[in-house]
Amino acid sequence: GVRWGLIGASTIARQFMINAIRAQADGEVSAVMSSSQERAEAYARENGIPAAVSTLDALLSRDIDAVYISTTNELHLEQGLVAIKAGKHVLCEKPLALTSADAKQMVAAAKAAGIVFGTNHHLRNAGAHRAMREMIAAGRIGKPIAARVFHSVYLPENLQGWRITRPEAGGGVVLDITVHDADTLRFVLGDDPVEISAFTQSAGMAGGGLEDGAMCIWRFKSGVIAQSHEGFTTKFAGTGFEVHGSEGSLIATNVMTQKPVGSVLLRTASGEEELSFDREDLYTRSLSQFHAAIRAEGQPSATGEDGIWSLASAEAALQSSKTGKSVMIDPQL
Ligand code: NDP
View 1 (cartoon, rainbow, N blue to C red):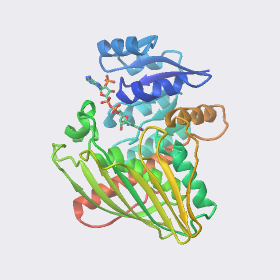
View 2: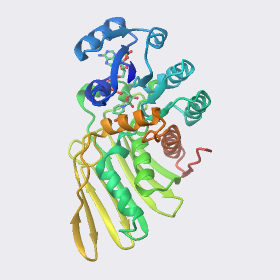
View 3: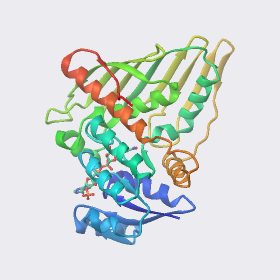
View 4: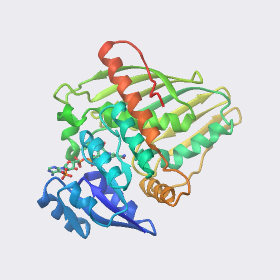
């Protein structure tokens, strides 16, 4: 079995990841760590977790095989390095760190230690995105030409905290959502971005100089160009993901989400076809891939390198928005 220690008494663990661990035949949530013992205990009680601790040492000295890191972003690096040193497998939330250089340091440490390291980019696990990737790889839309990503949401009130107030915690919509769009574009297109140009805004929700909206233009190695829109402030926009090729278009609606929902349409000269796809829970699939990787049967659905790519892309977007120039994306992997 795989005994998990949760680093961070977070919303994402409560809403999705605890269930995803327990959905595995061999998964167990053994302990939770919060920076506050009181909050750790309350969280453990509410979620039926047997142990609650308030230091990393106390967590890592327990009988656990893997840790899931879902603290605020500035803490991932140090917590990740300590867990790796203790020989635990690490599934880390995105962004892996505040800079791609830091993320690289963590991923290199994981490799040297021989443990499994994954990035929790859930969208790769969505049946919709996997179906699109397969269609493109099979040549069903011909040569891919352009992609459009619609991923501007309304940040729920219960999450209107550090993301919109604390730059030092890695707040802002680019580190929060652009990283997902980078990863999903790479996954669906089977291509890597080389250059990005971005405008960001503060449309009234985020303070402290943080952005709560972004529009990015991307160029990929193959020559594909893409646009993406990320936001915290649009209540009614809906989400989507489109790829347009020489022989067809893939038009997915309501797929930039945490749930296995939405639809994917393939439009070609022969008409429109609604694709059917797997509706497995995204996070459950992420976990089962991770467990398989621990058994040396494959890789996590998003690796450490994937996490470095998405963070390098977000970093370039922020730099572009600051300088008013397009920026090359090169994670130097
Ligand atoms: P939360 O704000 O819920 O949790 C982050 C930290 O905030 C916790 O570790 C906790 O610290 C602290 N905290 C939470 N609630 C309280 C409270 N009531 N009072 C004081 N402190 C509190 O963050 P999210 O769950 O939204 O995000 C956590 C991480 O997961 C981020 O890195 C984010 O980017 C990522 N994420 C990824 C998603 C995905 O789909 N891949 C989706 C959502 C988030 P402590 O542990 O010390 O108690």
